Image (tube, one colour):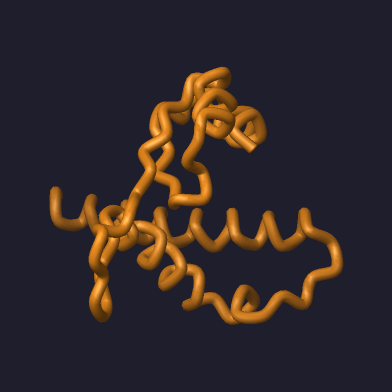
Length: 107
């Protein structure tokens, strides 16, 4: 998976925040071969009730942004590339909107 990530991003990923499923020497070595340092986000020893994991907000925020697009609410696409393209388009729209807001505050 590390190679696919680097291929898709043009070898720009340096750090990957992963869950406990990626602990171990094999996952760490596979990521290191691609120039990625794994940061495993672990739960504290005694968990009671809801506990916010570090960096989890990034993933949840991204899911929230994608949920605003009706076409992405359900997976009706037959071709995976179509769904991938729709996600790319949705996030391009989100980032363009954020850029316009930022420029409006700067000017």
